[in-house]
Amino acid sequence: MSYSLFNRHANMSKETLYEIGDIINEVRWDGSFELTNQLFGLYDGYLYDELLINAENADLPKEVFRRIIKVWNTCRTYPVLHRYTDEVEVAEVEPVEYSPNMGIAEGKAYLASIS
Image 1 (spheres, rainbow, N blue to C red):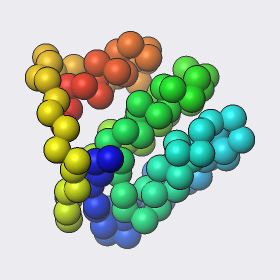
Image 2 (cartoon, rainbow, N blue to C red):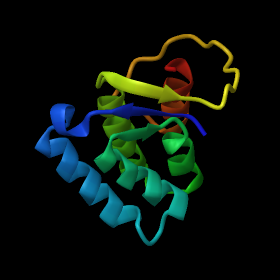
Image 3 (cartoon, one colour):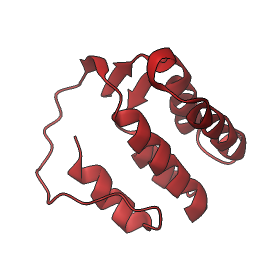
Image 4 (cartoon, one colour):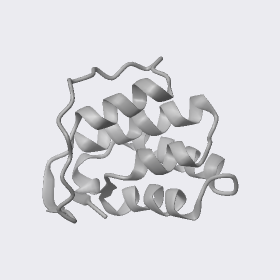
């Protein structure tokens, strides 16, 4: 499992904080435990690389998946205090730009294009 540690108190806006809470309330009972746990981790400054993969595997509604992508993208812009990795090799792909209207396939391509 790979993740980054960031200073949530110094970087996260209250809007992002509230959005994370709203998403947790929507996926808490229908999503996987691991996804819910990783969303709660954002409150403590942990950004898991597998968060979007777990969101996709949870078979969430498209709008909820897009909101998770948006939050993940916001959190990945914060300065990283420390990076933990399990040394998994990732193949390079062409960069993809984030779009609020992207579908699941585009979201996966976007996730694969950032590391």
